[in-house]
Amino acid sequence: MRTLYWFVLLVSAWGIVLGGCDGDGSSGEKKTPETLRISTHGGAYRESQEKAFFQPYSKITGITVVVETQEANLYDKLKADVSSNQERWDVVFTVGYVIFRAMHDGLLEPIDYSVVNKDNLLPWAANSLGVAGVVYSTVLSYNTNAFPDAENRPTCWRDFFDVKRFPGPRSLREGPAGNLEIALLADGVDPDKLYPLDVERALRKLDEIKPYIKVWWKKGSEPPKRLAEGDVVLSSAYNGRIWAARQAGAPLQIEWNQGLLDSAWWVVPKGLPEDRRRRAMHFIAFASRAEPQANQARIITYGPTNIYAVGKMPEDMQDDLPTEEENLKKQIRLDNEWWAENENAVLKRWNEWKGK
Image (cartoon, rainbow, N blue to C red):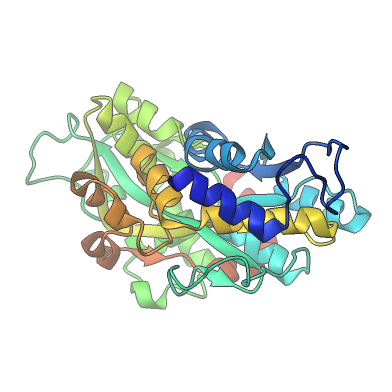
């Protein structure tokens, strides 16, 4: 019955007439199958989206969902597409600071909130140009075999920098976003006073740990693999990746304290034809509902943005979400607007520092 309800709801909203008729009510002529083109992340996260969003949406609506995995230069491609009216994608899903930069640069369509229901979303998760689809956290993670004494394990980023008390090779994500915050927190900066980031102070702090960084990871799959195999004993990592590795039996642990909360957003590139723009809005509406978001969080434990989604999940999984109440209290939200405004200058300085 639920599938039937969704089908009726969606086709009614789009004005599609059943019974062998085309869109203007005439009969006999078959319509070209509709397609929705989405740009999103790869790996385990894309797999979770396929199962929770793309496949159910396609089954309910009959619309073919074509998915493209993003490369590092997503922003440049998006800007070029909008400037040239290439219209490569209908919906883009990616990390916050890239999305906020696109917002600032006028590359996105306004979200149609007569279609997308924002009433059930976290207060900050819906703005005029985008809808946050998930909350994730970059956390301190470690191999428990490397630190067998449960009373003497790392609990904050200061401990990550303490190579005497917690010896062994480390790993951090490639790039300045997140790493500068980690360094400043390790250097004693109050979380409420992180921004604007003191870039030079952060880099001086990172100088201390740089010789111990064995791996600058680029893919979310790397930290759990490196930790489980013992290549490194401490690493920054995405919380969902560590959770998945633990489910597979890896002796890994998450420290939620000083986790860096971030979000990824659904947006629509500017300039789409009306029919494609309308399909994009209806897909975002579907992906913002509680049940699909809960289904995704069952697959990989990133936090839903629909406030009713957590209640649809098994209780024994709720403690593993970054948006669980107690976990949330311990963490710090990244300032995507600051990064959107400062990314280019900071990245240039970061590359100079890495090249030393």
